[in-house]
Length: 202
Ligand SMILES: Nc1ncnc2c1ncn2[C@@H]1O[C@H](COP(=O)(O)OP(=O)(O)OP(=O)(O)O)[C@@H](O)[C@H]1O
Ligand SMILES: NC(=O)c1ccc[n+]([C@@H]2O[C@H](CO)[C@@H](O)[C@H]2O)c1
Image (cartoon, rainbow, N blue to C red; front, top):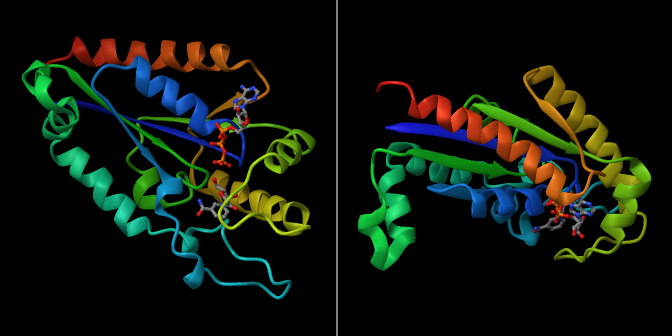
């Protein structure tokens, strides 16, 4: 069975979800897992001395649950793809290349997950663009006043340092580029990798 695991990381509002969803639409036999789906319940996320909820850390995420879903895919991508295909399940042939796209802001900071990636991308944008994009978003719970400068940005700087200490094989992408350009760049590289795998025996 041929498998490829692609990580789309990046800072908050870098454009991870937008890019990952488009890749998922374009890549046959692909599956998408988003780290944001694994946030712990608000009641158990700790609070710092400023009263800010500590959401921008691995402790705020059910990484064990996320890993178990990644591992289910690794064990049997064909079944997962067939379940998704529903009535058309027989069209999913085990001969193809199966692609898992994992997106999230801390995917390269968690070693057991980071170790699994064949390709790593990281979307980055400048501070002012990040702050502006984030100000238009409403999370649950919403960001309290001062959260970006008092918590989100300092945590980004800390998490980024940790990430760079853990991995060097990351392709950095300029998140200011138009969405279709970013998609074309990543799709071209991933397609090359898929074709390379198709040409190998296993
Ligand atoms: N290439 C782009 N150019 C301009 N705006 C973009 C681009 N990509 C995404 N955006 C916009 O930026 C905002 C954040 O995008 P998106 O939700 O994809 O980011 P994200 O990295 O998944 O965010 P987060 O994980 O922090 O919630 C959205 O309003 C989206 O439309
Ligand atoms: N999805 C959530 O439960 C949630 C709640 C509060 C804040 N966030 C933010 O999401 C970003 C990652 O995509 C982080 O910067 C969190 O602050 C998410």
